[in-house]
Length: 375
Ligand code: GMT
Image (cartoon, rainbow, N blue to C red; front, side, top):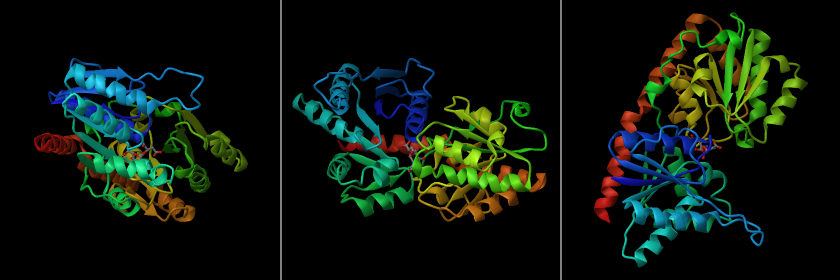
């Protein structure tokens, strides 16, 4: 198949999933065209089956807001015609599903039919999409898609609850290429980050308010009172300063390392003992799955789709949002001795195997085939 993929090319989970999916589809013989404003961060191998087409939006002073959807829909039309793309798979409803619908309509005038598969990722539904400013357009774009998928059962339920959706929504969970998370590093360079007797706790996100970054620091504060530990904070975003302030207020700034956005997530996870994800909500929690795939147990909140990924008492523990005390008690229960920690590490990895890419990508292929057959 010739598939066009539209996504956000950033460090966010939706962009990561779209990129890994495209790479895998190309390995399976499909021709994949990424159409977005920047080369996706995890797309470092452009092979003969993988192409990247940049959407450029010229700055024009008359426009207070530069019209990205317009540029994207025009680019989609041009690329579908030029490369004979058969299907568009758009990740994140806003504004991708809307732009794809416009492209579809423009192509119809030229008697070209292009089906659209829309994958809902979470923030496009729960945090942004349901806002009255966007709701009508998001509902419309979902209903006009030829197929709709969501990354968890919880997100499907939220979508049905928040929008007037007439389309069937298929749950296709996020996934992980487990082979990429098999530790290749014999020593993981752990010594660079912590002393032998210290546990390494990690948090990775885009540091938005929904991630409850202050909770991460407070949970770590409680942990390090009981056992020697370091906290690795990976990512960039608006709440980073809040975290820095909390670390200094609690007098633990020397134990908290801010690593910024990183292309070496697997290296960091290789030397991590525990991952913390106390989010207000999470449609899935791809970062937690990546941690588990590297054998890192997860302390998380129990909101949204997280319980579909992190299993209480097996791959880690779940607690109500904001329950810092329960989260730190559970963290200490995992970290207290090597035997318990190693058991949780093994169980976390085993749970992650359920989400291996080899199990999920055929589900997308089946949806593409079904959608093409119908159109
Ligand atoms: O979490 C974010 O702020 C980024 C966002 C995104 O669009 O990349 O993540 C959402 O999609 C990910 C991939 O499907 C999920 O793993 C995240 O749980 C989801 N974030 C939220 O629902 C808050």
